[in-house]
Amino acid sequence: MNRTNIVEPLEAKRIIVRDFLSLMKTLPNQDDAASVQTFLRYLQSLLRIKQVIPPVVEILTLIKTDKPILYHSARRSIMSSSNLHMLFQIEMDVELAQERLSQYDK
Image 1 (cartoon, rainbow, N blue to C red):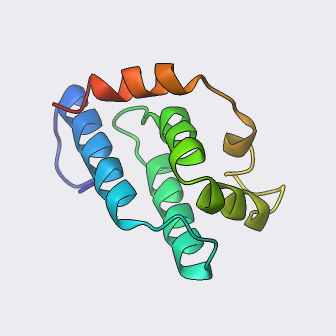
Image 2: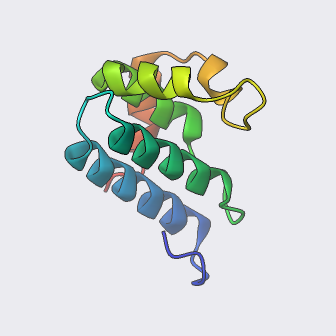
C-alpha cells in the first residue's frame, strides 16, 4: 500500500484487502525462509499503517486456515519479544474473518 497518498479510510481498507488477496495467490504454503520472511514483512507493513486500523486479526485468521504450514512456520520463527508475537496469540472465527474482509473486497 502506498502510504504517501491520502485516501479515504474505506478505500484504504479496500487497498489493504486487495493487497492481501494478491499475496494469498502468490505466497506458497511452505516453510521455506523466503516465504516466511515475505509473510512477516507483510505483517510488519500492516502494523506501520497509521491512517486506518488494518484488519490484521482477520488476515492472520485466513492465513492460519488457508496456509497453515506458512502460518505455523512464521509463528515459530518470531521471538516472544517481537511486536508480532501477540498477533499470533489471537484467535478468531474463520467465517467472521471472511465476512469482515469481504465487505472491503468490492
